[in-house]
Image 1 (cartoon, one colour):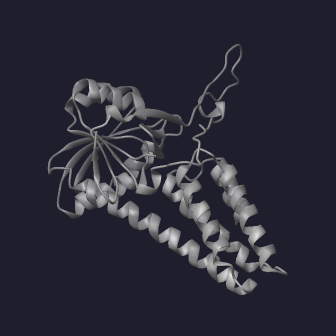
Image 2 (cartoon, rainbow, N blue to C red):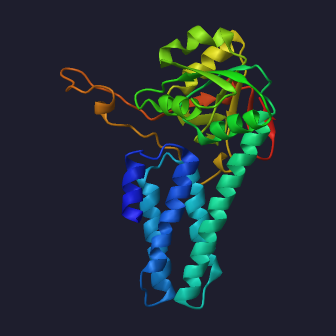
Image 3 (cartoon, one colour):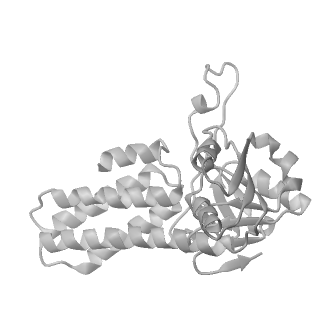
Length: 283
């Protein structure tokens, strides 16, 4: 399960940063099914496999914070037996998963309060926290019109559109990325997720920055929703992920290069606010 999870993260088969963190945390359960001679052997296995998961994608900040917490909890427990160490690992995994899930839901509930009944929104890619926000808005009886960018080259927005296609409280329009500027003057608010916030920069799926910049130019507020764990301090350096050229161009590129970065950087001065489970932070 760990090796398969590493492969999925490397290939970005798991999209949302919070879902990546949960999947990687649960993958470590596999270690409790193996045999170890000593607690030290088990702890080394936890560290080694956690590092393998981290190396799978160095751009995922929640993956970094959750894996570091799990390893820290296991090592600091100073278990007296292998069985006790295994139980500590399971407890640490459960605590991390519960925190990620509750934080995502809390952020979504808080962000939903910014949405008015009848609003027209625009969102980008397939953020699970944005989906939580919309879900809370629907539960409150709010109806919205929603523009969803395709989020090329992996077309993550198509997934968002399909997930909302049966929801009665929303009218969804899927648009190509380049059409965002055309529709933004009709929009009341841009709503996106984030991979992480470091200093005064939000890192998120490629295409977020031009949407935020255009929205700022036409006076549309931009709200970014994410768990507080995505606010990163020391110890983490964001490394962009460059995807395969074949996602952009199926035929071989002859005489030119194809660049396919996974993420871009949006300065917070372009944002109206960032919403976490704890607060609405104004900019």
